[in-house]
Amino acid sequence: MMLIFIAITMFILIVASTWWFGLWSNLITLINLFLATMIASTSFEPVSLWLLNLDSSYRLLYDFIAVWLVFLLAFVVLRGVTDVLSGYRLKFDPITELVGRSVLSIWIAGVFVCFSFFTLQMAPLKPNLYAENVPKSEMGTIPDRLWLSFIQSRSRGALAASKERSLLFAGYELANHPDDIEVDARVFDPNANFLLYYSSKRRTIAERTVLRIGGK
Image (cartoon, rainbow, N blue to C red; front, side, top):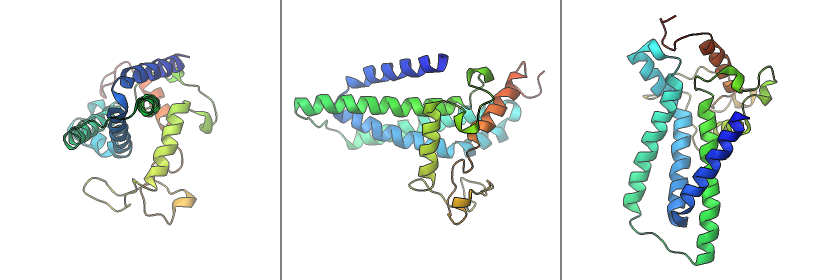
């Protein structure tokens, strides 16, 4: 119930706050948000590894920290670039403006809620916040399952990256899904183990009194 309340509250607040910015501004915001959230969702692991190499004490938190660092950096850069390129706000007739800003506000809120709940899977939350002892397909919540499905599909398409080792990525070591054996792409969560992995990680965190590795 707590997560449902958070999702509804977040959705309403984002719709209410973005509606006033208008159709053109919301269109730019939506594009930037989509790009930033997709970049963060598929590229947080190298940043998490970099943080781990700097200081391994808080390794249980680094995925959550990394995904938000990448998102904020990507969104700020994209917003800055689009603000420079779009120096003039386009004007629309009243009906188009009203309908457009309303639809885009809802879209922005939906994307942000889904991405936020995806990142909450990595947060050091109490395990009982999510349903336990349920089939893997029913783990998590609707927003994060929707986002995981979307990112997985994009990692096979628009955001596909080669499995070869590169400057940003280490060698691809995940077990391929039977459908992806002949696909040269770093498929995100190919065997749908993301929710299971972080559920186990939250139980590990819950057993500790401090988050820093080395403490009791």
